Image 1: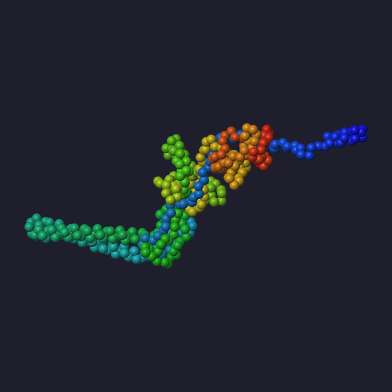
Image 2: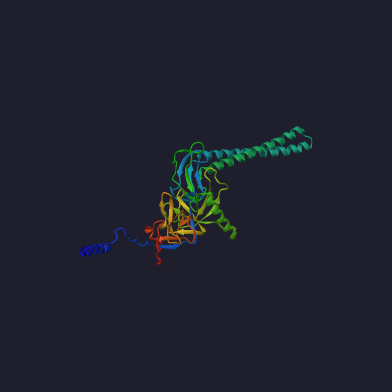
Amino acid sequence: MHMREIAFLTLGALLLAGCPKRNEFAEPPPPSVTVATVAAQAVTVFESMPGQTAAVQEVEIVARVQGFLLSKDFEAGEQVKKDELLFTIDPAEYQANLESAKGKLSSASAQRDLADTTFKRNKELFATQAISELEMLQSEADLDLAKGEMEQAKASVQRAELDISYTKIKSPIDGQVSREFITPGNLVGPGVSDSLARVVSLDPMYFYFNLDERTFLKYQQLDRALKSKQKDARLKVSLQLADATIYNGEGEIDYADNQIDPQTGTIEIRAIFPNPNRLLYPGLFGNVRFANVVKDAIVVPETVIQKDLAGDFVLVVNGENIVETRYVKKGARVAEGVILNEGLEAGAQLIVNGIQRARPGAPVKIDSQPVPPAE
């Protein structure tokens, strides 16, 4: 081989040796994530149920006697006391009935006195055999009849006096009165008119709601625990109003129905709230809440929970620093985060930061720098 050919081959080999490999790829390092060790803890869960307020006492004001409405004796919407005058019915007819009844009573009283005198005289005459036994018995029967008629006359007077009292329509309770439903001048009474007005008590105030079977069993456990410490203790509750504010007054459960409704699977419960400032009115909607301590709860920040077509899931790191998916079942929200009812156990390494960089099945680098559990 000639020297020129040898030199050419040597130069070519050197050039080939100096060229880099086209398919060589440097794998990037695994992404960094921050994990938190999942631990079971006791948390306070507020059970919240919708319901509606109701007055402790609510009375429809009606006329008990018939007559023309003479006057309305209150201002619509004002607070009234028990036995405070609300309406007046024209009493003229009933006053006349009373005078007539009193006249009949006087007549019956006179008849009774006459029959008594006659009986006593005939009793003496019969003793001397001046009259027959039949006459004696007749005078005794006349006295009994006169006594009966006098009692009837007394009852008529009492009835007439009662009718007179019914012409003054008074509030049977303390409370707030509505507007008048019928104005003066109209004929009112049984068979003629319905309610004249309504009076409702405002302090205290009831709140009715329903519990499903699961929540009712929790309530029963809490109630028994309270009563084991104090016999007359009642479960305390709070009230969230329709504007999301918490009512400034603690209530307590004072009643539970005696059976579960088979149609709805719920039971009616009642709480009672003090209402001195009359902020609560009957018919307000809201949510009653009571506290329940859940032991050994798994609680995670809500920001770590993701969702796909299969459901809610979180990402964890296994012992080989590989990301795994854990599908979970969310429970109640608490101050510390969200309770997970299923899918995650204590001791798991939960990814709390760097979630967007983690991929299931891929390795990650665990950042030892503690970072608050929030994205």
